[in-house]
Image (tube, rainbow, N blue to C red):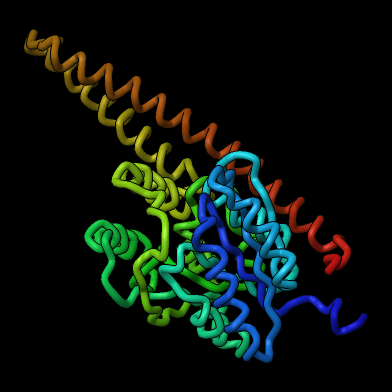
Length: 316
């Protein structure tokens, strides 16, 4: 294999939605950074359904920068899907998630990958240094995440570098890229954090508004449930259902004793008893169904592992 055909050491994945004004300078800075490095890089820009001329700009840039490759989505599919598409196209064993808006400069990419190249960490995430317009919301999100997941970093949703196998094990769920650190740490991968300067956007505007907050909270609860009860859903639903059913059953027995011995009966009490019995049965049945789904997921993971073991080396 010739040196020109050797795979790069690092693949930089750049989701881009309407970033035509930012990409030329972004690629220029990447070129200046990569020229001074001994490790080799490729940049994969994922055009996520842009409508502002991003596709035309990328055609020009591909001809100018040999390390640039482009993946296109016909419609907007979100960052998680863009990272998945970039991962499938990447040739390196180390991946970097880096936005195209120039709030982070490409000169910091080598600092992100250095601990991984040195074998000191499996994942490196940046900690924002500088004025951040969404610091309040980000602070609440990060505090809640640290409380729920006990991860040893201050900033979960930032630029990051990680080994390829981390992405291979990442669930293909919308918006779950925000919890890549959480899911990686839960699987035993080592995670470190370095400070990364934050700059104002070079051009354009942020694609995320306050409407993302409730979605983020629900995703956080979904990830927590997946890590806590995903393998054993009966622990959650079964215990809750059994508890409610037991309360309803014991209360019903007590109410019958009072009714037959002292002729005391209250309709509201019987309503509560019936509700506990019905809800308890429903929750317990949900737990049993969840167990069947968990068994199917376990079999799917085992089949995937067997396929990965028999798959020939990646064509690079």
